[in-house]
Length: 265
Image 1 (cartoon, one colour):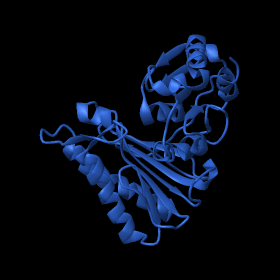
Image 2: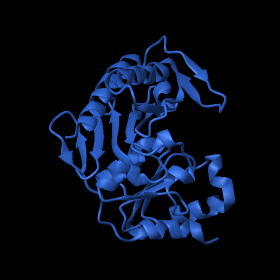
Image 3: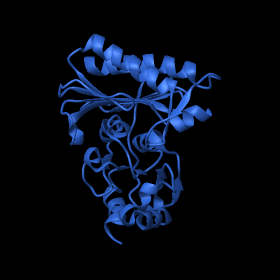
């Protein structure tokens, strides 16, 4: 394990303690951000904690976080989503996670520049992590186990996950028709949502996952885990998801077939 990965896992440990303590708290404060999405005091406190720990260990590194933006000018940048799935968090649904990534190119336009990713979902008792060249791993309280994408090779046999069918971003550029056509062509579709959809692809329990609109902090930590598990992640048009602002992850075998659903009317 590299020093950077060991540190990222310690960051996740610290964030887990804070977010679990506030999960379900009667005095949890929830505000609405300018983009009309919710943010809780736990989101802000978790990001402040992670930023403080990074500053103590790596004072020259930059940080990009959902709640407090970008600080620092180093190409070595930590990308943080303190709570991915805030809507679940504030309603008591246990599907939420802290996402932590490290990139050596800022901003990270190509996925290979993201050197590690940690996705920690303490209320689910699951943590996924990967560092380049070291494979992808899952811990559920015991020893880490390696994870690998599925071997499903036909869309008609595939299980596909997404977040929200009625997300307005599906209406952009004819995506709605393409998305619905994809869902009709697969064996099973479920809206597991957010980070979980993509981690299920990395585990091999789902075969593809799609999101029509994402920010860099939503995606960065997912990318090395999916890729190190043998999967592929791009934008819906096949470009880098870090540039495209949306994502489709697959077991690689299905990737071109999924993209083809969005390349024809």
